[in-house]
Every structure is written in structure tokens, then in C-alpha cells.
Image (cartoon, rainbow, N blue to C red; front, side):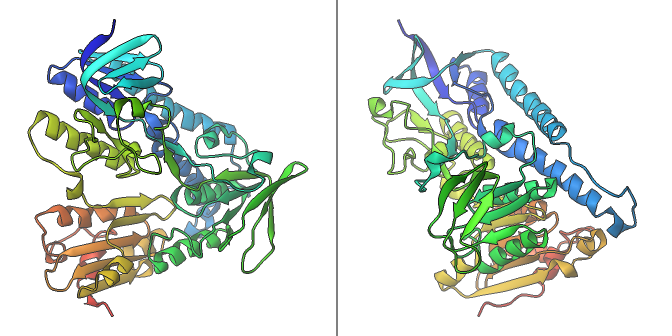
Length: 460
């Protein structure tokens, strides 16, 4: 006999636990299901562990350059990878255990550990248990994609998840994929002490960004002796003794990169193929992402999809916003929509890239009249003081409405600075002059945003 609940939440990633607790606090009986690790990607293999590792890598980088600041700390800097991993594991462990204890200690929430499969539009099986509910919320996340590269089945390789178990220093890490995940690992392991080569099929890194951003990121990485191989259109792998040969057909340079380890970082796939969605009649697109409307409801009434599995965002912050949207619609009769949010994200190389809405390329394609402001970080006092002058700030404005169209901020603290722009973009279509006329604290990086806005020129 099936156990009956008011709501079932499948997955404990960023959206699931908060939604389960919110529903329970509203008096609903809630079942939440987790088949593996509480906290999902962000806690276990994504944001929290990678940024913890990045912090360790930055500490090593700063220590190596201490003499640039007049500080003497010794002749060599050593990185203990086992202790680096131990620190990361401790941070992850606290977060994971916090999510698990929170859910198991919440009234009206029953936690099931096991794999969930639909047996109907309102029935889910977990092991021997059958669970029924009128409302079901899918929050199953995604995983690293495995491309059909020749020879891949003949070699060992790493992905973002298995990298979390590495407690040694690869001699030469070859990163296949020149986008966000790959570049963060590339810089991180270079700073730990590995030789690193990034192999990208496209003509430039992070191709969704403007060309000057791609080039700026490439310059930053190459300044740390990371090798970047672009236009690698014929990638193939083969085992050579204890090494892995990555064959690339690039426009220049050697045709083969010989590495000790390979990291695949070529995109993500949703964890939807083993949920039995066909039994519930839930529609997915050709890539397996669950189709949802502007309130994140699927084609089946009462079934919602949140987080990475719905294809409407691939970040922790979009997943949490999904929770807020669903909770508002289900509990508060507040018609919040996915289309109301502004695209925003960061690339956590050092220095980071902060992004909001449209790129310069987007604006040009729109053919609207626009203004552009741009300033190199070398002309930002705070960056000069810290000896961190790589990158630039770029903001785009609608010439007629004065609204901020988008921003690309590449430089020290720009993952934080971007929020001063985002907040104004959210505020009732406020004009850029709201920021331009604000008095910001000196010395900060953010104080130069008004300066950039005071130097706008027509976008040619």
C-alpha cells in the first residue's frame, strides 16, 4: 500500500530542501528523496568544494608572489595535496551534514534514501516503498557529459566529480574544454604546481562571452604558464605507457599533447534518463531536459521541475531562484516567473568574471542604439594597490531609455561588484544614472563603476 503525502520532492540539491521545508512549514506532509549525496552538485562536487580548492590554490599563488609585496617567506612554497583535499572534505562534510540533519529534523518532512522512479503521474517508487502525492517536485540536477571522442574508452579520465577525490599533484593535466568548469580547474591545478594544457575545439575560450572577454581570460591564464590550444577540431585520445596522448588538429603547434591525466569538462547532462518520466507523461526535450513553463510546471499538472534538470539555468543561484518561484506560485498566489530574472553568473578564475544580461555582441545583434563604457583594471586604484590589475570593466546602456543592458566585469572582486549593477537593473528599469550619481566608498573596486558610466560613448 502506498504512503500518501501532500508533496514529494525528488532530490536534495539547492532547490529541493528549501522547498520541502517551506511546504512543511505551511502544514503539508512532505516526502523528500535522495539517492546519493545530500546537498546535490553544489555541496558535493560543485560550488562549495571547487571554491574551497580555489582558495587553497590562491593561497599558494599569493605566497609565491609575496616578494612582490615586500614580504619574505622562504625560498620555496610547497603544496600538500592531501591536506588541501582534507580541508575541502571538511568544508563539504559540514555542508552535507547540515542539509541532511536539517531535513531529518524538520517536522512534517520524511526523508527517503534511495533511487526514485515514477510509476504514474502521482506515484513514485523508492526501493520497496510506493509514495503518492498530488504535487511532485523534481530536483535531480545534472552530471558531466561524456562526448564521443575517439579513444576515450581506452584511457582513464577525470570529470568534475572524480576530481574531488584527487589527493595528489598531476604531473601534466590536460583539460578538454575551455569553458567555466575547465578553466577553473586549469588555473587551480597550475597554481598547485601541475603543468596544465587547455584544449578547446572552438576558436576561442568561453565562446558565449565577447571576444575581448575571451582574450582577456586567455591572457590571464597564459600569464600563469597555462598552455591554451584552440581550434582543436579533431580531438582523439590514446594511451602511451603511463601517459595519455591527446591528439589535436590545431592551426599551429604540435599535433599531440602528452599528459599524465585528462579532465573532461565539455558540458553537462540532466539526470532525467532513469526517473521513469515516461510513466508520468512528463515531456523532455531532445537533450533530456524537462520542459517547463514560466512557473516551472511541466506539461503534467502538479509536477514541477527545478534546478539544472529543467534547462532554464545551470547554477546554484538559478536553482534557488527556481525554489522561490515555485514556492511563491504554490503557496503565496504570487505569480513570479522565470522570465522575470536577469541572466547573471560568474567565472571563478582569479581574477573573476562577473556577468549580467546582454553581451556587447548581443547588443550589436539587437541593432538598438547603445552606449558603452570600458575601463582597464590598471586604472582602478584598488586593483593597483593590491597589485591585481588584470582585466577590465565594460557596461552597455540603452541610449534612449538609459537602462543598463548588460555588463562584463573581469577583474579583482568583480564577482561581487557585478551586484551593484544587477540591483539597479532589477529596480523598476532604473536608469544607469542611479549608479552614476551614487557616492561609493573609497578605495573599492565598485567605486569605479560610476566612473565608467560617466565615460560612456556611442557603440559604433
